[in-house]
Length: 85
Length: 140
Image 1 (cartoon, chains in turn cyan, green):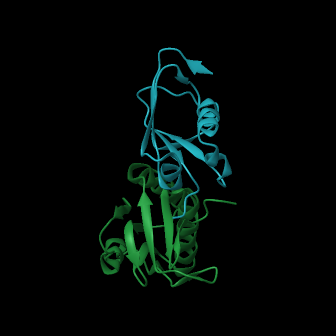
Image 2 (cartoon, each protein chain N blue to C red):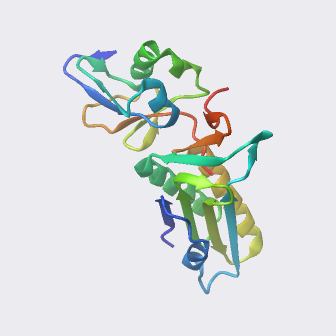
């Protein structure tokens, strides 16, 4: 599911930043309109993301499900497996 | 009752975290201190590099502490401080301090907070070995 007039910026942390080689991805319009579509698109472009134990998406500092909609103004980030503590 | 939560690139002041939870209504203060050890799965570790998505880490940490207050309504004060950046062996990586009226709840709440922090808080750890580095838990 893509939105014709929407672009997105995705922040990358940890190993996802190393896999992609930059700390922010800019997706021009038409951009994926949901978390699920975004993950599908990014795994296609960067197959190494699919080899991670997990890769979540955060929208505005909260974990988001696959059907969560995305908007240009959202703060979006890829969240590889966390390892604090 | 407002929890003291912080992500810092400076050495953690454990005494300050303990002072932050001191209250005359609590008879128990429990403190977990996570430190950098010299091996991981038998592989010698030289140092650790922590990376944080600060705004989300603090948001999620706030959720964890709210859950703790729901589970243990007698919980008085909470302080959680996590370090980021490069840490050497023996450095303090995280401190969780809680104050409760009695000791049983202080142990339980402290363990819940550190265990849940490790599952949801957006901090990543890269271990440095003699022959390279690896992001902890990244791959199955």
